[in-house]
Length: 281
Image (cartoon, rainbow, N blue to C red; front, side, top):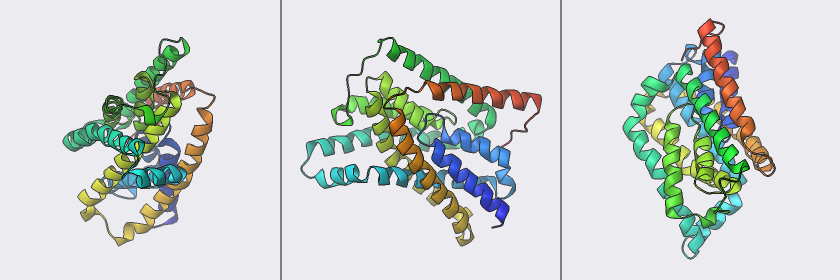
């Protein structure tokens, strides 16, 4: 692996980590970053798609480390703690919709929607949804009835799971769909964010393991350095991002991210239409 490819891999890993848990779509940003970097000029498109999914493991390890005490307590409490069992059951319920729809439609989605223009459109639409939800909260039209993930019902989990399924569309944002969806369904900002973090663990680990197994014929020992650099970069940047986001939501809403999505999506469309940037994937 030459130095240019190593730098591209490092950048892709950083993009994954910094965007995975923000409501701005890590997949969308990876598609756009890969296009700008001409990532598929160095490796095949098929291997690039596996790489983009596999490095999510780094971001998930960051969440596992940040919540290691809580995760350990839940695992130890499974035999006897009702709250621990309830949280695990809710995570399973929320995981199922995206898992089923992903298995059924992932190939079609990759063929049709993994491109800069669909990503830009999804970013803009998602931005306006966030603005709408935040305005409802500000006006008092939506009052949180669930202050902690321990207070969630199975129906709450199912609703968030259905919301997460929309994130199969690149540019939507898995964290954005689950956090904003959770707030729409009555969760507090903190509860929705924490449940989104916890739900990311089975969802992204499953996606990573499935992708590596399904496309194992594309990979070889020579790819280990490439995947390692991307995964480590994703871990470090995601860890910093999670720490920052938890502090941020204690005193801010998600309006800033909404406007970022809208402006960024419009920039992609305008630059692509005018030819200033050749967006390809």
